[in-house]
Length: 125
Image 1 (cartoon, helix red, strand yellow):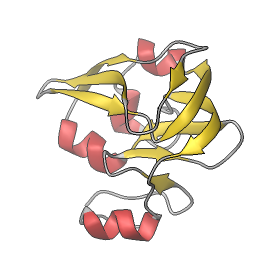
Image 2 (cartoon, one colour):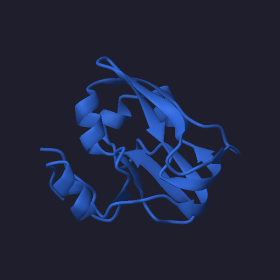
Image 3 (cartoon, rainbow, N blue to C red):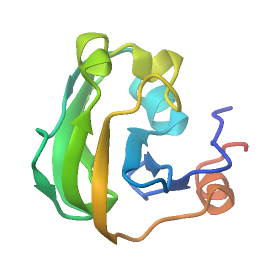
């Protein structure tokens, strides 16, 4: 069973956000487990302006290609080059080393609590 990080909030599209400033964004273990072995990640560039709920990148696994959606609006201030170089980090450490990017948040999109996200996705906290 996939785990959900208790301190994070989640989009319906399986991205997590830590609520810090700037906010760190990643993909949940639920998504990582569903994707299988992640082999490629395309992230927004530093300076890009994101809109909550809009496509901001791509994640590819041996099973499929999925779009990444921004859980917030704001400007990208940092990108995790380590996860671009080693996409398998998404499978091994989705809530740690595999963070994707950091955003100076101007507005949040609709986000779920960890409990609500876990319940909706048959996961545990």
